[in-house]
Length: 274
Image (cartoon, rainbow, N blue to C red; front, side):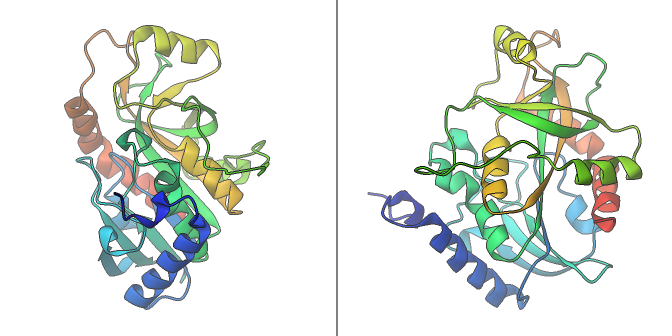
C-alpha cells in the first residue's frame, strides 16, 4: 500500500506542493524563488554557472518528491542566487511518466516551483531529433508540443488555454543570446522504450520535430499554475529510422556529456537575461 501523499485521490495536489514549498523555504532560508529550472540529461552543469548555490537539498527529503530513477539526474534541489539578485530553484529530480507513479508525481516539481513563487519555468531535456539537419549535441528551442501520453495533469473540468504554451517572449530572449538556435515541436511519448521508426514517421507526419519522454505534461501543469515556460531540448541523437544505428541510453548520456559545457553556458546566458 502506497504512503505517498500524491497517490491518495482525496488529497489536493496543490496542497502537497504548498507544503513542499514551505519546506524548501525553511531548508534554504529563501522565502521565494523567481525562476525554476528542471535540468534534464546534458543540462546539469548550468546549475554551477548561473549563480551562487546557497543551499542544496536531497529532493527525496521534501514532501512529494521521489528519488530519481535515472542516471543523469542528480536528485537534488538547489537554491541559487543570480547576479541580478533574483533567486533560481534548480530541480535535479525529475519523475518521468514511464516510472508509473502517475501524473501528479510527474508534475509535482513544477507545482512546487510555482508555490515557491517562481513565475518562469525552464524545462530542459535530452531528446531525439527528426530534422536531418540537426546534429547530436545541438540545443533546440521548443516552440510547441504534441502530447502522446493520452494523459493530462489537469483534473476534472479544468480547461486551460495552451495557445502560446512555450512563451514567444522567452524564445525571443533565447535567440537574442544565440541567434543560431533552431526551434521545433516536441512530441512526448510514454516511454520507456525508444520510438520505432514508424512512430517517428508518425510524429513527423503530425508536425513533430523532437521526440522524447518528458516535458509536455510538466509544461501543461506550469501553465495551469500561471508560469511562463521556456523549453529547450538537447538533441542527443537522430530519432529511430532517421539515424541508421540502434539507439541506446549510453549514447544519450555520452552526447549529453560532450555538449554539456557548451549548452550549460548557453542556458546560463539566457537566465542572465530573464
